[in-house]
Amino acid sequence: MKIKKIELFGYRNYDSTVIEFDDGLNIIEGKNAQGKTNLLEAIYYCAVGKSFRASREKEVIKWNGDIAKIKLTINKEIGNKIIEIIFSKSNKKTIKIDGIPILKIGELFGELNAVFFSPDELKLIKDSPEDRRRFMDVSLSQVYKDYFYSISKYNKILQSRNKCLKTITDVNSLKQMLSVYNIQIASICLKIKKYRQSFLEKLNPYAKLAHNYITSGQEEINLEYSGIIENSEQDILKALSQSEDKDIKMGFTTYGVHKDDIKVTVNGVDVRTFGSQGQQRTVALSMKLAELEIIKQDTKAVPILLLDDVLSELDNTRKLKLLKFCSKAQTFLTCTEFKFDVPCHRINICEGNAKIIKD
Ligand SMILES: Nc1ncnc2c1ncn2[C@@H]1O[C@H](COP(=O)(O)OP(=O)(O)OP(=O)(O)O)[C@@H](O)[C@H]1O
Ligand SMILES: [Mg+2]
Image 1 (cartoon, helix red, strand yellow):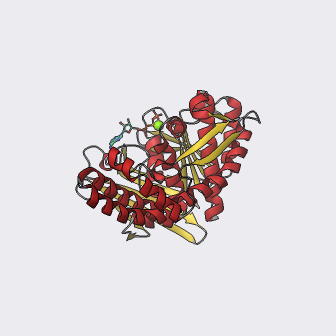
Image 2 (cartoon, helix red, strand yellow):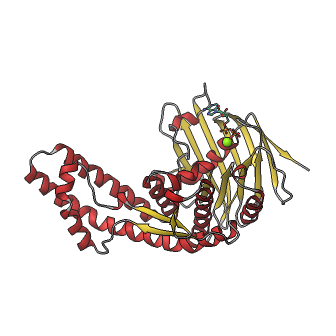
Image 3 (cartoon, protein in one colour):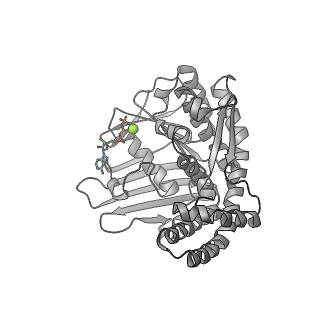
């Protein structure tokens, strides 16, 4: 799948802009605060229905405006597809595929698969397990709708279970409620574990390849599922009921896939604790590049690659290696200045306006 064109109306600092893209490497150049990241954000929105920024949804509407619109034309094997997202100050956002509004966000997944990377993705390594779970969730949801619905259901049940733990004071009736939730949660728990485990098993060899390539064979990365050890519904049910007393004491559910993590090592050492800044950055990048490979395998289509400000983070050898790697996918790479002699389509962004740069 390739993005042919984007049209933005009243989106962040864009008034009304049409930008056409190339099938290969698109370089989005411009000074600071011109709208480069905003453009990647708009593309990413069409892939997952959410921003990579932790901002409120309505913030994408241009100041003083009432609505914002993104319209993306994608070229697929079967022909063109149009994804539209309309944000409104007064209503919930609407997503349309070929003019038809979708009812659930899950219907959007798979229409456009995207892998996003920015220096901020370092949190994938540095921060809490939540960021690593989100990485698995976003990847898996794009490829498997079943996973998306399962994780949504799991979170809902978990919320209700936790609410009971906080509000019901009578131990007997609480235990009765918990046993009902345990049965509901056990099978979904197992399903999510299996998805994540096999995702990481598939991801690992590609992360190794990418990492080896970028570090010129200096470092070996390893990714492993680190979470619940039980392998059957029965055992999960047992573990859930065994942790009930602890749950009651703590006031929340202490066992389950909401505690999962990814164990990341470089040359056998835990990179989160012992890795240097540069190692952590490269690890996060390798994980993302591996994600691209497995989405490609699972969907039989190459996802698009969105790289925000990544060049400034790397030395020259790594920059060139990354650019070479990009040739595998339609890539959108933002930077303030591009000085590499590689084939690419250069677009300059200035105050929310786009101009093609010809050499
Ligand atoms: N809702 C909005 N309405 C109008 N302008 C907005 C809105 N949201 C953000 N902006 C503006 O968009 C501008 C460009 O943001 P963006 O993050 O895309 O810049 P950038 O080109 O990526 O810059 P940098 O090189 O520093 O990363 C910012 O100055 C910001 O104030
Ligand atoms: Mg930016």
